[in-house]
Image 1 (cartoon, helix red, strand yellow):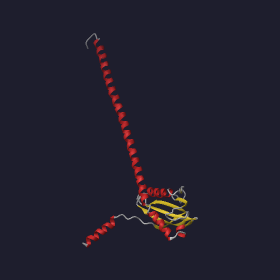
Image 2: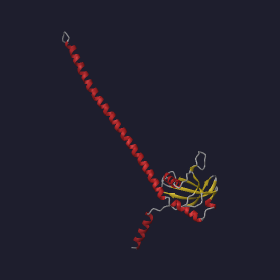
Image 3: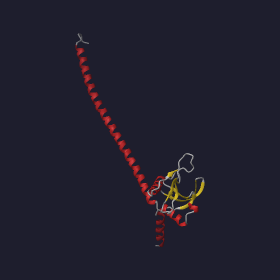
Image 4: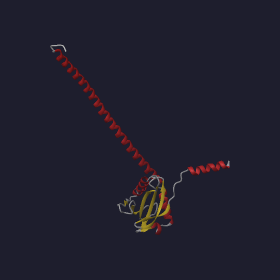
Length: 215
């Protein structure tokens, strides 16, 4: 009995999905090593980035993405002088980057969350342990928004698939209509050609009938 109970508990442990906890990491940004709060999600890069950007934008802050072929900070999105009260009451610069964990795993993503105060690494120098804990909770609690963003991506993808299928269906209908017109014209051409043959044969027979001697 005890063995069965142990087996059931082990089965439950390995079948219940475990969500990644946020953790501290280090990244290079603005040519400096800086601390970041990171978290891994089993969702696409697009879904995760859409979720966190939209969440912060709903608070009234617009991010600016680093761009440029030779920009080593390309892909980072900066929300300057933003107040994310779930993390801290203070206004700070929040910098995010979302990366796929590998080219192979498109639904495995890491989110890096940097915080700066007056251009300095706030995670390293300014934030309290409580603030850092709240930043980790902010990322962990982002899951519902990510699921919603992922659903919207799926809806958009399916909508595009429907539009594509409808276009192909219309193209096939147009091709069918063209073929039917061609078949109709072909039938008319055959009928006209048959009449022409009959007329020509009648003319030929008439000419043959005018011969004075039998052939």
